[in-house]
Amino acid sequence: MLNLNIKACYNYDMKEEAVTLYEYLSSAKIASVRRIIKVIRHGAVTVDDKVIDDPNALISVSSKVAFEGKEIPYVYHFVLILNKPSGYMSSTIDERYPSLLHLLPEELASRAILAGRLDHDTEGLIILSDIGRLTNRLVLPEFHVEKEYVAELDKPLDEKDYQDIINNGTDFNGEIVKPISLKSKEGRLSVNIVVSEGKYHEIKRIFRRRGYIVTKLTRIRLGNLNLGDLEVGKYRLLSKDEEKSLYELVGLTYGNRIIRPSVNKN
Ligand code: URA
Image (tube, rainbow, N blue to C red; front, side, top):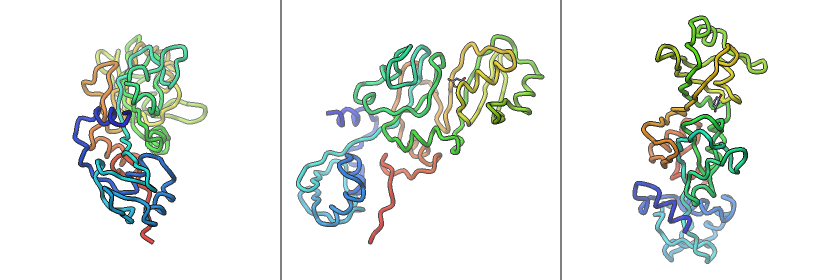
């Protein structure tokens, strides 16, 4: 049931999608990948009632697959972006404010892992997925995933402070953070700022240090994903191409939404 609902959330037809046999079985997390491969090689896996002993055999996700006699449905994974409204917590439980998981249908919310956090009063793009390795990498500083924000300020950013942010950077407990880019607009009352670190309150602190208050903060891009015209409070599942480039951005191989460990032929 859960599985079917996730499938229905996707806007392209996944019925005939091909996956390798071991990927199909790993998606359902029935055993470790090593054990799954061993069982396949021992001839204890059938696909549409025929024994298949090659873990790399390509099969359709709508095949009937049995593992040691037990039928196993294919489990769909998901990656989505949400346009987080102000007033929601980037956490999986309600704290001072409600969790942003209330904005997702139950079948996604119950499996979603957040890729990073936005402050309760920050709006904008946040990624959620049930693929832990992907969400982990998206927040690790070594992958330098770019985050672009629009920050509205309480007073116009003067030239001296603009140059200071760009050239001298901001000290975060001994680490100097310089934005990848900083562009002011609307009479310098608003800026576009791109960073890659993901420090706690990073943008607000950059400006607060110089006497400015960020009155509104919106994340409009993360890596190669733009918020576009996604309405505040709404989510959308990524297209295949978007998922693929997100995986590549953080050095993961894309294989039908399942991380593909290398399978040794021997
Ligand atoms: N920087 C901040 O200050 N707050 C956020 O929510 C994100 C980045």
